[in-house]
Image 1 (spheres, helix red, strand yellow):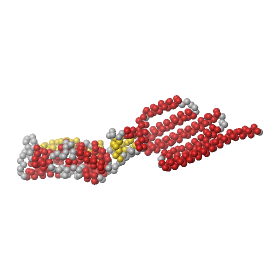
Image 2: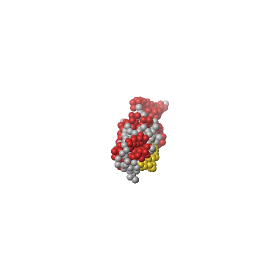
Image 3: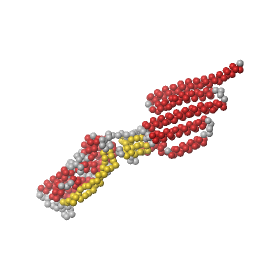
Length: 460
């Protein structure tokens, strides 16, 4: 009987002590878990960071299992289980802990990558690639730890892992660099979706999307440029700010090929000059009053028209030549009005009855007309910012076309720029300022600079 009592007493202690350690471990770890989660929840409310909520969501159930496994491991350590069973049992518990921790890490990484991927407007391909790489890293770490737990040699596995990691880094080097650059761009937040930027390499436009590896730029609302994030981070970038008011209709820039054509008419004196000019088409009037402006765009102020030059140089009538040269094309809104003014000056001189001079043979005034082929350009502006940036690189012939021809060839009240600003952007004040601007007083290049200054001041 005493032997039985002794055995029961010894067995009871062997069972109760590990059980007590297990229960104490469960209570202690669960208490510590509760404190940790309470503080984490308060921290999440203060910071309003979504990552805290994801961490709580992923680990809330798993952490209970971790408490149980840790308590069981402590109980096993103080038990009298033979060593040949204790060590494998302990390794099994740590294996279960590692498995649970790996699954939680995979879930946490996936949710964080998806969260930040959607926040950065990353493509699904980039999100999947990031998930795959992160999962591979977690699996490799877990396998190495598992091998170490069971005492397996890990040197060969580690070397193989390092080799494959090196290969992956070399293959996806640019992708990884762009991925890190994308995270940096999101962190510094000095370039955002909707900003109009210009890179030192020439790319410019509104940012429509910042992916994990690339930034998408809409160029003048038509084409799309994908810029690697690493290039964007290394380049000098001019950030003009957020999107401006969109026009109801975009401004389409055109250019033209300018051709000269003989009409077959010629005049050897003032009477013939006036008579032919009375019936000349607007293209003839336009050519002889504006061709020098287009052919010599860097001369200012505006040169005399062809009629004034011929009267002065060929007929030798300097007084009449000065009168014809003083005709202000900017005040005369149509080619008909310009023609009527020139004809009236010549008729006034003829009415005095003093003009009888004629040109020498070969010195007649040959009437020519301007023939233009209008060509579309690649440029299109949807707001003032795009309009301004296009104006900087617009050809002088295109600038001439939009400023001079609407009034004196098409009979419009003002230039194309003012019409678009008023009708499509409701910028009447700015349109009026440009409409009152006298382009005849400057070269085309100076005209461009003045328009740019006016637009920059208005945008600011």
